Length: 366
Image 1: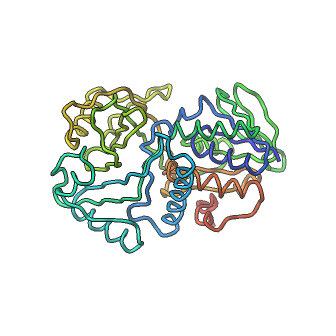
Image 2 (image 1 turned 135 degrees about the vertical axis):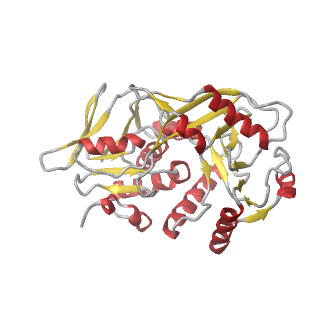
Image 3 (image 1 turned 90 degrees about the horizontal axis):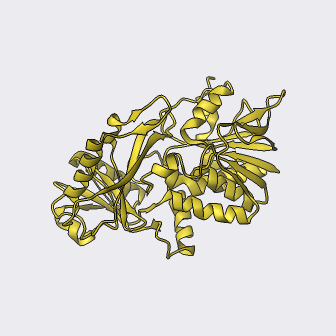
């Protein structure tokens, strides 16, 4: 079969690679460059922490498992690590999360201020005021590096990567069946099946096809520091700053409070005021045990894909047979398992039970 994948983020690249591994003839088209969208500005914390429903928790755990398999084959890379995560918030939330995680058997240990320096010497002793949670099995990934890693194998397997294609949408024939794609700069491509995995643009593309998908996408940003003299090995999620290591001895830094200050112009370009960026880095300084303040190397801002109910939308569209959709938050944790399971569905037509709760049809009226 010929398959067209629309979207050059981590979900599209993972699905394209798994389809190529299954022997499909795959072309991936992306509006700009690989990883130029939401995948290029993700904290990409690999976790299944918190109060998720059981079916979503299991999918996330399977996602982490696939990253462990990838890490086992590539232990020397600097873009994928499993050095744990530390979370702290108000005491009630911490204790509630810990209770849920313990009931599930998720590796969750309550910690206090005295534990921080023992776990990671780069964290300020006493930064936790009451309790925190240490999750030893969590990790992080740099998605642009992961995408480049997968793209190399994809190309070796004969996959075609078409960058700078401009806006690309599925083609639907007179029967309502997907039979190709058309792009603003690269023209038409006939194929047997189409996968739509273009992040926050997915909702707009579907709307152009007359298909409504409830959207909860939000603005987000990710700052990258200059090389730091001291940085934590763990992923940190705190009340005022979230951060993780990043290749090149840098840090990736973000937090939700910054999003209210993101400005989007008429061309869709998003910017963050300098004082907000400096305040975010100052929040990082407050929790790091370092002599030198963090300095900004750059940042990216834009829309983060989030389905309206917060859970992935995965599978074939009832209104357009042959057209599949992959629209999800937590693309980092889920990328490898979605690529494997959804790729298998597209290649074989056999539905996987783990994806059953996440079908697009759940949003349709009875």
